[in-house]
Length: 299
Ligand SMILES: O=C/C=C/C(C(=O)O)=C(/O)C(=O)O
Ligand SMILES: [Fe+2]
Image: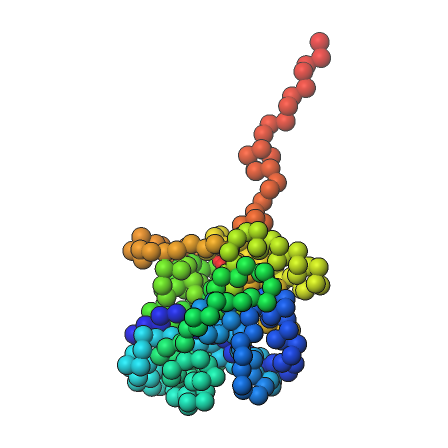
């Protein structure tokens, strides 16, 4: 089993590089990192050198990167994946440099999502300089699409150390690789794709200020503000250029003791399974069944 130590980055192809960078920096708030690569832009949210890369070209996710413990673990992972019959490519020096990692390998998950494993992701000692006061604290998780979330779970939980934290019916599988409720989510979708990329913010005030800012900027709000019963985080999903969906979230449960946690299965048909603030506020059935008051008998 391959042990993933963290999420590392998302690389996405964009037709309008300037537009994507402008949105990710001036609207989302990420810091633009210097890049000497023509047609490539890197953005930063936390101590990682960068966590989001846009590459001028065909629109759509290129790859999602994770880290393993080091070069030996990477070599073992390469062997393990090849044993499973997966076609594994070892990245070259230029590719590693562009990813801000020491070395990496790449393969497709069973659905065609391009996944990369890196031996080490470079950290930056420079303080993060967000482009606006969005309150972003970290690149929190990434969510992939797959036609069968159970099959996806089987892949991630047998090939890797992913454990399921919660399910939303057959629609979503939320997996952890450390105590954070999920660093990797898989949503049911017709084909391989990046469902969204999450950035944690420091406070509820940050999230709500961001909401007003996005609305004032005319950004498409996809969902929220709301609260996930799964992680418990308060969320806000919004659409950026070329259909890249971002999520701000605040909070979220930690699962420190695997043995004490039992994954729950929320009903995909219930709106409150995605947003617990959408639960029924109408009178409960008990009140509806209260006997009608009987008019006083007329004498
Ligand atoms: O309906 C599921 C939503 C899950 C969460 C969460 O619980 O935080 C996400 O953020 C997600 O799907 O990525
Ligand atoms: Fe999310």
